[in-house]
Length: 496
Image (cartoon, rainbow, N blue to C red):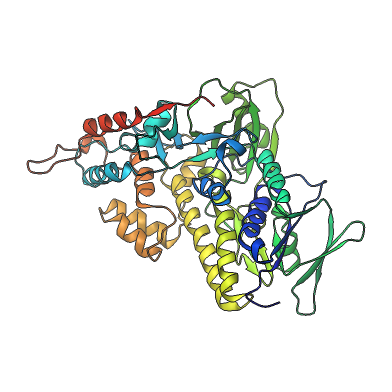
């Protein structure tokens, strides 16, 4: 096969990861002769609890030309303007905070938020909660749609909530109509060729499926990448303690806010995600600090389902493979790695992996230079996401259980995270350090880091705060809130 010719791609495993990857690679290569086949066992279920996304999922649908009206109804989907974190801090005035997806309007308000954060870090008594400075928070609080009137040209950035099973089914139908081959078969063996590359998948019934590139979306089993090719798995257990989740749905709400709720619990946190047909609930926890039975009881009590409904217990393998691209195999989804769902980044990485792989392959085929550059780039994305999520635990302002105390005392931190924490407490410029750490392309923006630090109230204690001296002015919160309220009036109430 020529290096410039699109490859024959075989995807092992369906679900959201497998079908997103198949759709993207088909969309990119089909017109030039590329072929994509998805091999999906009818006997193997998908995890299917990842019900939230970042705005990258919207970009995915936009790239494929799929309208929201086409897929959202089919997948029970709702809008997501950000995440509200509740109970992660015991500091007065910081019981919760909102982490928004920033949009064009926030280009005018974000500098005000950052300015007041800089002042408050130095001990001056100015308002610096992230909730007060971003349009997404106002829209979510007022239960507004993210689509403005035609006369208002500044649409916010947003993600979605969705039913993961239905999303996979929708993408399967969309893809197969357009030429992606779907084989409902159970793979029994991965056949290697003379050069130790993957040559084919052998299936029950004797079918042999050949390809040039094999994408491993077989979940935590990682049948090709880890089991057959020996891709090394790097655990994150010393950084992230949680290894279990117990999940169960509750009936849908007639009215809800277009946001994910992340609520601290005794030994972890729980999500509340509104869909049109139900509310998704899950408790992510560490089995070192609480038993499965205790976690189930705590979740049931929190959502008012003590004596009804069934739960699912999931075990999580948190970490990543050292190289996402090994020989002619690309690992994606859970086969590639898993970082707990706190910031809903799973599909974000799937999309980035597929797009970056396609670009690297087009430049260099199976050559090592572009492959190695790709692997370093994907690894950096994982490390950047891990650092941001670790920071949620390391910076927590709770002391009521050993779980939270141990997280606050955890010193298994990357040098990058240590650098950002030091910069915050020594009043340095976080933006400059964040850019320098990631060669000008950090995974989490300066605003997100400020929202986390400020949302927890990691400032000098309130009794030590002093008024601003003459000649030093803070940003006006009331003026900003009035401006955001005026902007929000251009958005209709959200009625799915």
